Length: 230
Ligand SMILES: [Zn+2]
Image (cartoon, rainbow, N blue to C red; front, side, top):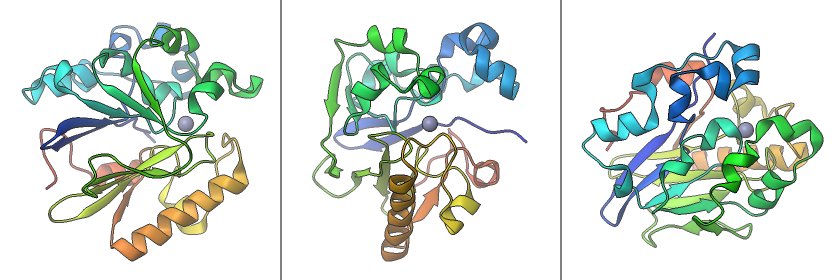
């Protein structure tokens, strides 16, 4: 079974928005050195063409064209390429920065604190436990879905022809969504379950598709760049 670590690029007339950034592009040369635990435990494979920077450039953009990055949370497999976006505003959920710098010892291995330290002077925008409509037009709404981490965010994306909810690690598999199952690494299972229930309520009321980042079957059905959902 292969588990992917996706990132998403969204074109809006007021900006170019990333949701999550995947692994550090430099690690494609030597995954074992950058992600020893992932490499050991999950047989990490990282191809050059999967680098986030390369995929953005292949679409005809410069990295500096990215204006906003939404980090679902600060676990290392979601923010590896975040350092590439020095000019962008970076959005995280309530308490996420503090927890990443001082996590419970059992969660230490999920963060690359040195990398986060080097980004201290970036434009961080930490939300306060509420949803946030990024451009005020309802097209991109950051959803507060805590539990996996203190500030876990999902992203509601209203395209002209469909509505999608990107979930980061709010939920890990399709089965977990249906059966409202939390994940062993979740910081707060009670909150995590409430957030999963919230995703389902939104899915049903909005007629949205929920995309689950680490679900291999979901990924098999998802088209990759340069394909573009509209
Ligand atoms: Zn995570």
